[in-house]
Structures are given as C-alpha cells and as structure tokens.
Image (cartoon, rainbow, N blue to C red):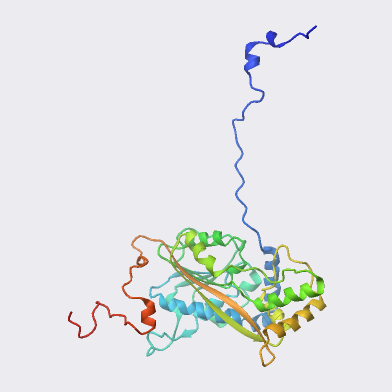
Length: 364
C-alpha cells in the first residue's frame, strides 16, 4: 500500500512560497586590502630610537644631506615661486636646512649665492616620528625661513585638504611606504593644479653588496636564506605609478651614490643610527648570528672589496619630478615628431638649429 501523499492537500500558496526569503538589505563590501610589506610600528620604533641619540644620528646624516642637496638643486629648474610647500616624511627637516643654505645659481654665476628658501613663503615638514621631527628644532636654520612641523598620526594617510600646496617635496621617505600608489594619489590630491612633486627615494639595487653577502653567508652557515635587506621599488615601475596617480609631464632618473666603509659592521651600524634597519613583516626576529656576520664580512670583501681594504656600499636613488594636471598645461610633443635625431647630434653629424629654425647667414 502506497503512503498517503500530503501534496494534494496543501494549499496552493504554500506550494508556491519559496523556501527562503530574499533579504531587503545588504552589507557594504570590505575595501581591498593593500599589500603589507613593512611593519610600520617597527619602523616607527627604529626612527624613535635612532633620533633619541642626537649626536650619533647627526653623524650619519651624510646620505640625507647628499640626496637632499641633489633634490634641492632641481628646484633651480622651476622659476615660479612656491609660496606654500610640503616636505613629506621630512625626517629631521633636512630639506629645510639645505634650502636655507646659500646656493649658487649656475644660470647666473655673476650673482651672489642666495638660499633657495627665498622661493618658498612657507614650508610644512610632515613626519610620523616626533623625536626625529623635532631633533634639530634648536638649530639656527629654523629662523631662516617660515617653518611648521606637522606630526603625522599615520605615515600613509595625508591629513591635508585638496589643492593645498604649491609643491610637495620628499627626500628618502617613500621607500618605507607599503601602499605607494595610494600615497602618490593622495599627494596629487593635495597639490594645486599645475603644481610639482619633487621626490627622491631609495630603490632598485640599493645595498646589493650587503644583500648578496648576507644571503650567501646565511646559505653557507645555516643552509637557507633569510631576508635581511628590505625590498625596494624598481625605477621601471615608478613612471607607471606616477601616471596611474594622475601626474603628467613625468621625469624619472637614477643616481648611484657609493659610500666606502671600513667594514660591513660599520655599514650596518650606520644604517641602524639612520633608522634604516630592516622592517619587513616576515623578517626573522632577533640579531643575526655571529657566524653569519663573520662569514658575510669575508664574502663581502672577496666579492666587492676595494684595493685599499674598504668596502663599497651602493645607494641607488630614484629622482622623480611630476606635475598635477591642469587646464592650459604645457604638453610634450608626440613621439616621432622630432626633425633631428638625438643620436646624430651626440655623434656630431648634425647641429641643433637656433630658435627660429635657421642658422646664422642661411637665407634659404
């Protein structure tokens, strides 16, 4: 005997009712998470500890001073005044000190040297480390220009309004940013139309000598490789990142600064005093083993040592100049529209004609 079916006895609306009701509300989707490479809290502590020892910190300012001077010299190519400027991730306000120093102008060698700060009405120095930001607050350069120190609660979030600054400068700070595309887009946002970004950051093969020596030493002594030098952006990627952030008229170039040290231990000590220690999220905690350090010293000298016994360390600096888009902004000529090959000019086969298109004495 077949069991009795209840389907014919159910009311028609009950048969057509869906098993579950659809929701009339929705939850917002979580924003995409940026790739986290560096431990920002560890980097904050490194800067704080380095700046707390004022004398040792100032003794290793040679790299900041050299890169800052080369970046400041690029301001000579910008003839317009820059009333309100921002020094992003300024460190101990190195650029403010350099800009307040008299600098000769190659275009006018007959004029007495004048500080580049005369082109700036006001400079805002923004940094996430309070001890580093105020390290040199008592030095004389603070009275040479109008200067404001701004403490950033988060080094990757810029708390400034749109169209605030006439220029943004940054020297040796961007290479510790996790989300570089975001910080470049924020920089574009706070710039006024047709305002420039001038920045310098470590990248590419910086400290490749130390990197290879530590990797080979770790492989020999421990049978594996641990990352002791932080990864850095490549110069081939910087132009694309600037373009995606909305910048125009891009100029990107690379400069290698080679510093000689008596030993790899002196190099690592200076990096620590600079606040430039390893801050990778997945780094091996604790000090590097003595056996690895001694092996790295020997490998460093064998592969890269100088004849005088010193060890070279290469700092590859990426310089960038980019402009915020604006109406009526000058535009580059289309690719292939040139009449003269630069190769022919450099080889001496052709000369660049003067403005007007004719050489002197040429009536044709």
